Amino acid sequence: MKTNAIIIKTKKKIYGSLLGRNLSKFKGSGLDFREFREYVYGEDSKKIDWKVSAKINKPLVKEYDEERELRIILAVLKSGSLFFGSKKLKTELIAEIIATLGIAALEEDNKIECVFLGKEKKIFKPTKNKKSVYSFVDYTLKTNYLQEDYTQEDIDFLNSFKKSLLFVIGDFLKPVNISALKHETYIINVRDKFEENPKFKGYTEIVDPITLNTLNVNFTASAVKNLKNHIEKIDTDLFTQCKKHKIPYTKIYTDEEPVYKLIKLVR
Image (cartoon, rainbow, N blue to C red; front, top):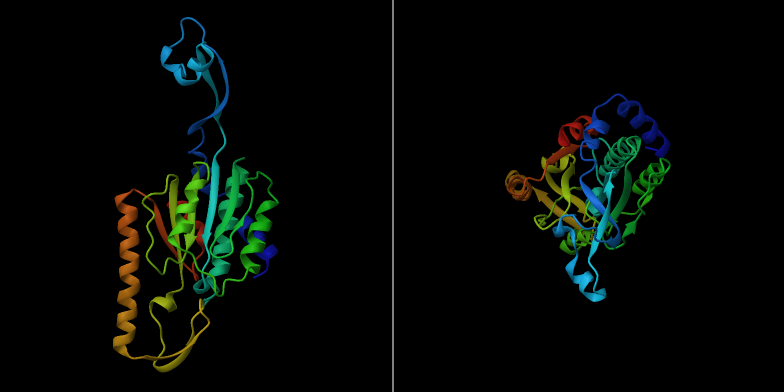
């Protein structure tokens, strides 16, 4: 699907939905430091920064600006396995998710940035420019995912960003630890139903999307069952983490429209 087609399709679905308003409920969640000023007699002494004051022998107070805009990070975990889909590619679904969240956030005058993690990182700077969504979607569709993969270090790297509303998007086909993320985190698991329930029978030649090695796999009933159990265990571990740390979670399949599940996710 072309970038313009996704943007147009998404705009038709997003306007009139509750997604933008649901995102906006997080506004004003913090304060931004602006400057130091001299303490005024009668103020609460708890506001004094004693460490800085001691250096100049004068009581100083930190001045803050209220944070009125929401900071949003859309983080994509790049992996060769995203270059797959029976209905449409998982990368196309991710492009639709990014378009949906991006348009909804920017319509509410929030600042948004997009981050692609893996062997080759791509970091788009925070912006309120509505044209930026086109760049995010275009990169999502045109970047090369084959031979790409992410690590736990990529997950931890997200803590280097200023505290934000963070959406982590990927197919999560291997275990990760998300418990240490400092952000208001949301997990979006993108999948194709075929990979959870493959219809192959007998010997089938497949290509590992990360190593590009060709494998000849015998898809017996027991082999398919083992694959299902393996994916189910990974999903259960991720869902358990989310539940324990109160991290909202959703799974979206390639044959689904993402906007409805995204509205439910941030409700």
